[in-house]
Amino acid sequence: MDGHEIIRNLPMAKRMRNFGLSAKALLRHAQKQALKAEKCRLSGNPEGEAAWKRLEQSTRREANFLQQQNHILSEVINNPKGTEKCV
Image 1 (cartoon, rainbow, N blue to C red):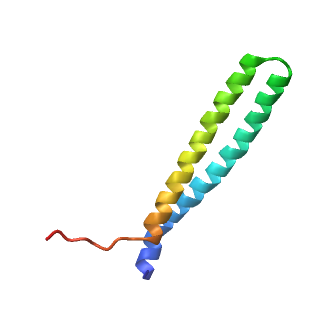
Image 2: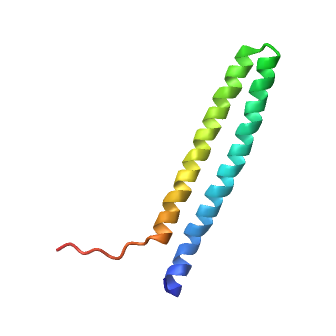
Image 3: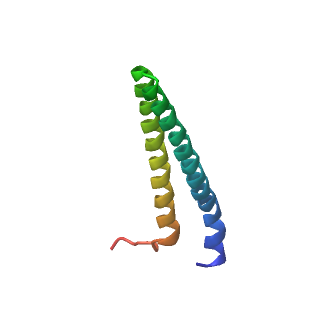
């Protein structure tokens, strides 16, 4: 990789970092939501438990999406394709 490619890839590397940090933060938040669901279950509040579980699942899906985006950008940066010409 020459210097021009490194400079060009800096914005993608920053996006990758942001995807990773956001995914980790969302996963921590999902853990807190799971604890709240468990507290609701223990206190006999099934509606609250169900609501917190739905929020937890949604949060984990978003974290998974960000991790996938991070992986895609990693592949783009680490395995760049050369210019392909049609024959």
